[in-house]
Length: 341
Image (cartoon, rainbow, N blue to C red):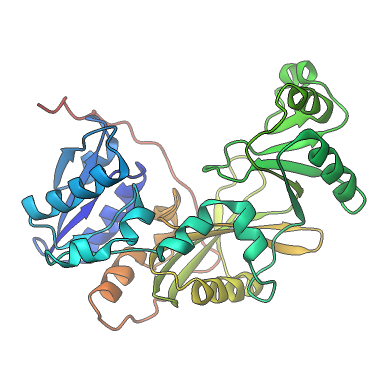
């Protein structure tokens, strides 16, 4: 089977490694494309090609169909423009290509915007932290006043963001120079943030939220159109260098199963949680393999294999997971690929 992964994150090498472990030599060929000629994901692929940059959505969709045709792709596992591609499966089906979509177009679009996602999420499926979405300073001030009456610490994050970019805890005690000199990370002085807003009458949606101060879980999952086939919980240590532990939290297990069913999640995806004073709360659903995917598979669950078996229509036996296992990752130096001609 020829499987194509278009532009995605460098951590895809863990997925490639686990796919190879699940199949006899020569049974699958992993093809990877990226707009950067030196993408580290190329190091783990059987074949790699450079994608054209700066295509419009329609142009990129046409390019993907043509790439599948030219390279005899049988299974397309998209990262870049996954929502757009999920909207047009018939273009690929017409040339005999199966597309792996984590969810349908509307769901993927919803997950992309946390303000819309949180607002639409039924509480019986999973609970999020208290939040208020704002677009100007007056709304921000009102949100801070409202949430401060119920929560000791607040934080902010853009509604559209990845990798935690833009997340900051609101600091009501220190100014930015004090934070800088003390090496304080992921915090921002409340008054200085308000001052900056005075120069920006309206801004992209920002979430003002209760700060969840407890441990965090990253749950790597394999599913089949709403059926949760396997989920591995990684509980992150709150101590630097403490690694992560393969956990089995019952509340998280229930929420993951309900979220998978509610959004009909499929393939490989990741769901994140964090604990606050009122219990564990949902942070986000990532419609892709996580950066820690390889650590999850050390638990004894080859999630990539489970997902591929499901895609092929085969029965999936639940693996025996090694709960309590402490895992971590180490950096490995590599020689980058020579520039492609």
